[in-house]
Image (cartoon, rainbow, N blue to C red; front, side):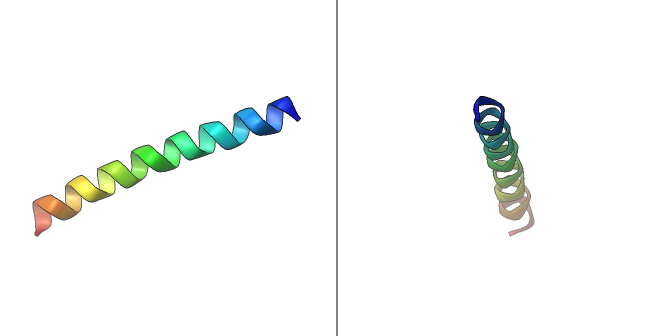
Length: 30
């Protein structure tokens, strides 16, 4: 279960970074 939790946290971290990059690109385009 610990491994699963780490995986979820890692995925969330990656998602958060992707979202931040997306927001930056959006603000540049707009």
